[in-house]
Length: 106
Image (cartoon, rainbow, N blue to C red; front, side):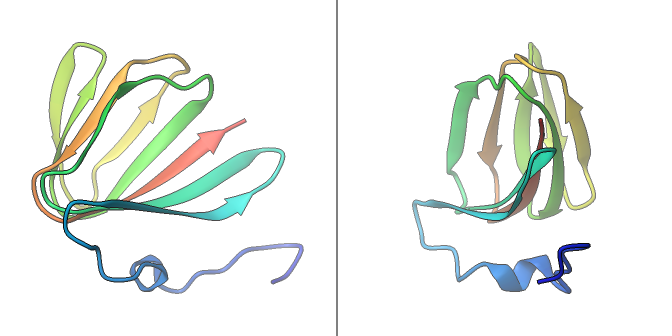
């Protein structure tokens, strides 16, 4: 890997097959500015409500989910992009097998 860039030609190839009843996560990059984590959810799996001290960006790559941001519930699908401020309560429930990229801004 170059010190100047991190290149991944296909994010979906970074994950194994998603086992039933599970959530997989893989850290793709971590430095002083950002931590990048690729998540894969089996259908029906969820991250219950939580907060983070970091601002964050969610980019949905594959599948569909219900996401709750504060007191609002939205639907996410491929191409959905979400920016969150620190300490925003949020949760994610996969309606289908789901792949999502999380960027935690430090």
